[in-house]
Image 1 (cartoon, rainbow, N blue to C red):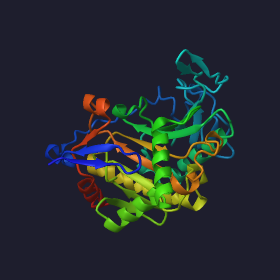
Image 2 (spheres, rainbow, N blue to C red):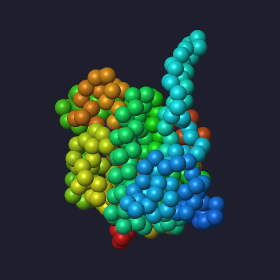
Image 3 (tube, rainbow, N blue to C red):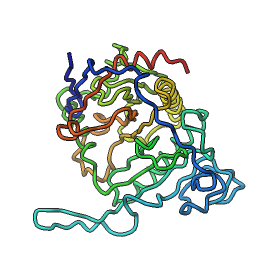
Image 4 (cartoon, rainbow, N blue to C red):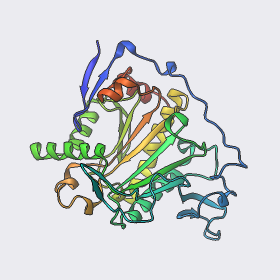
Length: 340
């Protein structure tokens, strides 16, 4: 019989329909395209094909916008939001609008077009994570920006248009509604129980163990109780911190390890599925003007990994429900048993 499961943070309901269940082998893999080296703007030696770099980890003897780099950040050539200009909020009758001000950057994770993130050494993944921190910290100095979203699209169904391993960062002039829902849920839970809901979830997941995927000294990976998608995984730090950019130097390699192992397990279990991962962090401090007064205690940054094994159709769009044919307990057990 199907189950309705409620996400305790935002109150979203998820339908777990086991009779429509799929085994990991039932999800048809989609081939990942290898980019043509001559046309790949992210390949080493093709630096002239991108806008000038904003930041890079590179050989100290190398020059900007040239080869010999490990991680490289460039503006998106086709940005969703542009950094130049003023926000200029205005009303048109009952409607409100503003200019599309923000930032849109591409983090090229490696010079090797065929080396996916989970295939890189832990220290190389750590450099990518440190790049996220550096770029988020820098952009939040701009008071026009309210929120920084770091995300990765892997595969065409997940939104990637270039096969070379990369992730993206978008700074927005408003706080996204989805994040506000999480912030409100976390704040209300804290006001009622004087405890962080993220800490309570983490304790219960560790105690029950049925949805755990992997854990180390700094992070816990688990399939959420109300998983929206088959094999959805959340990565949460053990230490309370609302802002991703407050990650400690010693936590960067622990996160790199947890991310590597989790992505390796997903790759083995599901034949390298297409996926999105999203870094959920608190909005800029100057953006909430004291409204989120307990944010440092109630909210905890976390990463969501969402394999794109099924299409979102009219029912999901029309209701906000998700139909998940695989229980998170079954998915987590399968992933736990995958050796990496």
